[in-house]
Length: 274
Image 1 (tube, rainbow, N blue to C red):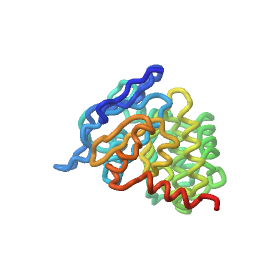
Image 2: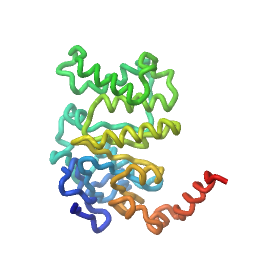
Image 3: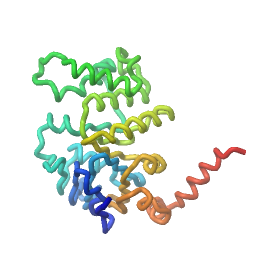
Image 4: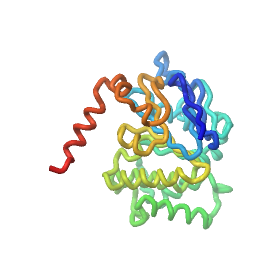
């Protein structure tokens, strides 16, 4: 299978020729006053691909996905299925792109089920429309996927951080988007749910017409699940492509100012059977 590779590193990532490009950013830049947060980033995400955005704190990772979700002003161009995201109506945007933030602040006493059902809002023909069978099925399936069915009627104010994160993940699944945007999706989850969530997303992205973009700090998770890696530092893309190529020892040492390989091996050695 032929591929198009990115050279230099801040250009479009490799895209399999038989896969449709779902999202493409060109010359993306975000500035706050005189401070440049993201500088001239260009990349593409193809169908069935999972792009992991990694890098140290302050690299601009979350700002990139905030720009994609139209949460910050930017220059450059972001196209979804060939259409400019800035010109896309909010309902169409919500039906195609689902966003899971790193943390959630809730001050209302909605139940878990009510929060998840909000993911179906963009499908309603009118503000007073009744719930459809498709909506009910999507909500129940999302609750089952995330292990939240038993808490469906509990107030979100009673939930732990991990339960709250799973509630909003269920909302995104109920939304049934084509592109998932995830900012540290397992940040508040214990190990069993980290494994479950990444496994669910890995299965989800294999279905036709789907893709994922995630910000993660855990390089092991990025390497295990990502089809593509975008390594950022100080607002720029340092490298972009296959995990084996991007996550090289010298490049990681340059970006993180430490021997990441040695550190990972030291951590792993603690689990070796004596």
